[in-house]
Each structure stands twice: as structure tokens, then as C-alpha cells.
Image (cartoon, rainbow, N blue to C red; front, side, top):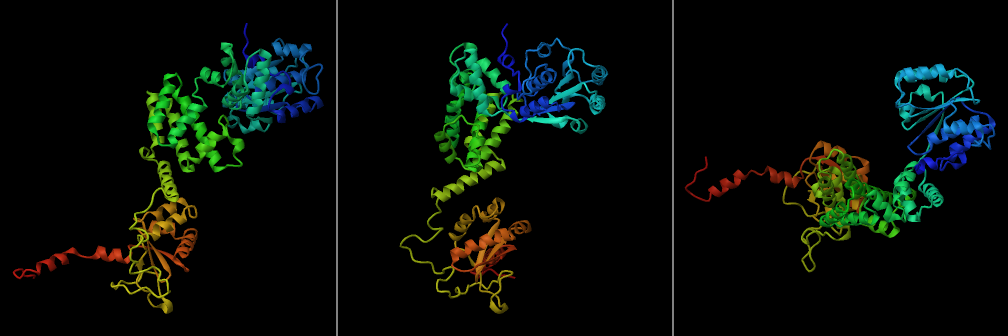
Length: 549
């Protein structure tokens, strides 16, 4: 009868366990020195070796001829424990034996001395499934166990185990196995089994296993059924995955905002029998790698999932700002979580790709931040320019009548409007400063562009919006007129005013003091206060037969 690979190649000694040397070395030392605890708790994700190490430890403590802490697997005790004929070593599933009655029966039986071996060992798998009453029943015997008794508890959800149980056990945390270790183990198993497994196929299986050796062996077993060569393409076909090349094509279409191209690749994969959730999951993994590469180009190399060549990763990373990658990853995660409840998974996947290609279809704040970042990048690269009449005068045009600030240091010419000075702006000796002048149209966009990255994003968004904040300058003072008190409270702090003053001073050629007030600039306030009824009455006075009373 055929036996699954993960069962056939289950480690039989501590030395055979892959990727958990920090645990196996300690257990070997304890077994060889006789310094054993009465209770162990093995915790970690699936397929990392918890139950395997529990069975090895149960044989090692009862082995008649141990070898450096490992069981010999040849003596009657080891063989009896392995084939289940010795009832002093019992493996329980807490998921199906989670009641208090089962634990009480176990407790009553545990006080008797073992019949065939030195120690009675109970392996309780998925111990977090025990009820509260069952945990309380187990607590007493863990607190005062007989000398011949040992408990080995295993769980994948440590937070569900009561603290009273944790404090009475030696806890060992099993980590995810590295892809390189999994790949090496798969190559060894395939060589022994006569499976033609290529290096790229083993690397892909190791990446798909997500740190679980049992999952990797199960996937290898599934891919080797055909009996042919197990390479990367064979793994993709057997598991119904899109593959790195197709995933990179979709991501490249998203980078170019090519919605038809992305939908065409998805349709091709769907027609070939690929699962749309697998396609989106691979896109999410690629977006994660690109985001890590973008934000941590040096220290994040070890965090990458792999599977893509350096040229592809570099090309894609250069075409995405970090804000857009964050938006892509957020949208993909949300779509994946909703696919399980969807009545039409293909339509949902297509809608997700449309939102990824065109951020204007997504009204979230993350999408808005991505669009703003792209616009800023386009402005910085010169792809988007201000109209010629908004910035400096066109070539050959006459210079403006007024300059701000005056090049020779002379005060600006007096304004024809007798507007009061803004609050907080005073000239020397306490006299009112000269009338305020509006900042030239080209000055404010340049100043806002210079502040990008120097002030927080929220404050930068306010300063960039002329409807919320308007700058007015006079006599070495730049006054920010905010639309409300809340806007003023956000901007009126040193982390904003100091960079703003430095940037303004660099462009105006002298020291600039920055203040924030609430209201409209003087020119706008006067225009708003102008009553158009006066214009109507003046128009009526042009006719002699109209009397104004």
C-alpha cells in the first residue's frame, strides 16, 4: 500500500529534524544528561515538527540504548512505541477529546506505573482545543505529577492556552523552516524516491510551502504523480498557479495603467483553468516584495519571497512609487478576503484589476495618496508644467511692474488700497508694516514642491491646497491665511513653520518670518466685502430720469 511522502519520510531522530536545531540540541542534551522535565509545550505553525519531536522524545526517554540523546530505533521499547503496541505512550487528539470526563479518566490512569517502559508519556496534540473545565482538571496532575509521568503538549495557537498551564511547562517555539532548508530536503527525498525534481522546481515548492516541511512534501507528492520531470512549469500546471512570468506581465500592465492588457492576461489564465484567487494571491506576494524592496533596499533583501529574477524586480520597482504599491497591496488583500463570499469570483477579480490600473475608480484615501504621489512625481520629472503665464514671464516679455521682493532692498511701492496690515505683522518701531503683497503665482507651487518630504504628508496636503491655505508676504513676513481654526492648529507648529521659513528665505533672498492666522487675505476680503448694489446705483445715475431716494 502506498504511503504518503510526509509520513514515509517523517524524521525518526533529532538529527533528522530540519531547521529546528535550537530545539533538538536542547532536547538531546536533556535526554543524554537525564535532566528531563515532567511537562513540555511545543508551539509553532503547522508542519514545523512539533508532533514529530514529541514522538522522538517519547522514544528517547524510554530507549534502552540511546545514542547521544537520540533513540536507537532498534530496541524493543523504540519499536513498540513506534508501532503503537506499547500502551504506556499514548497520543491524544484534544480536538476530539476535549471534555472534562476524558481528562479525568486520563488523570486517574496516569497515577499507575508503566508496564513495559520506564516512563508513561502522554502526547496531547492541539491542546488549545481543551475546554476550560478540562484545563482545570489537567492542572492538578501537572502541578504534582508522579515521577514516572511526562506530558508533551503541542499547539498552533499559544494564546488560547491558560497561563496556569504555561507556567508549569518548558516551552519550545518552533519557527518556520527556511526555503533553502526545505529545498535541500526535497532534493534529498526526490533522489531517494527516484523523482526527477529540478532545482527551480524544488525552490518553487519550498516557497509555496510557507515554512512547513509537511506541506512541501505533500506538494511534491502531488506534482510527482504524473511520473515525469518535476520542474517549475510542471509545478505550476499541477497546482493551478499562474506562474511568475504571467504574474509579472499583469503587474507590468498595472504599472502602465493598461487595463485591457491586465484583463487579457487574466482571461488567458482563467481559460487555462487557473484559480483567480491564486492569481490575486501571487500578485499580492509580488506587490509585497516590491514594497519591501522599495522601502528597504538593503536590509529587506532577506525578507523577499524570491521567485523573480533581479532584472524583473528592478524594472518593476522603479516604475512604482511606494504609495501606489501600498494601495495595490491593500486592495489585493481586501479582494482576497472577499472572494470566499463572492457569487462571481471572476468578476470580482476583474473589478480589482480595473481599480489597480486606474486609481480614480477607487475612492479610498490610499488611492488618493497614490494619485497625489504620481502627480508630484510627474511635476518633479517635468512631465507636468505650469502654464507659461502663471510662472515667470515668457521670454522676450517686459518685466512686471512690481517685483517681490525688490532686488535693491527698497520697500515695495505703496498699494493703492489702504488695507490694514495683517494681524501680527508690524514694521520697525511698532509702526504698521507696508501693505501686503500677494505672492506671485509661480512662487507658491515652487515653495510647495520644495517642502515635499520635509514636512508631514497631512500638513503638506493642506499647504498645497490654495482653497485652504493662502500665503501673503510683506516686509520679510510670510503670513499663512487658513480657512479655519483647525487648519491653523495643524500648521502652527515648529515642524511646519521652520521648514517653510527656510524654503521661503531661499527663494526670496532674505530671512523670512512665518505666521499663521485665520481668515482671508486683505485683497480677497475687500473683494468679498464689495457690494454690487453700488455698481447698480452708479449705472442708474447715468440716466437723468431716474431719482435715487
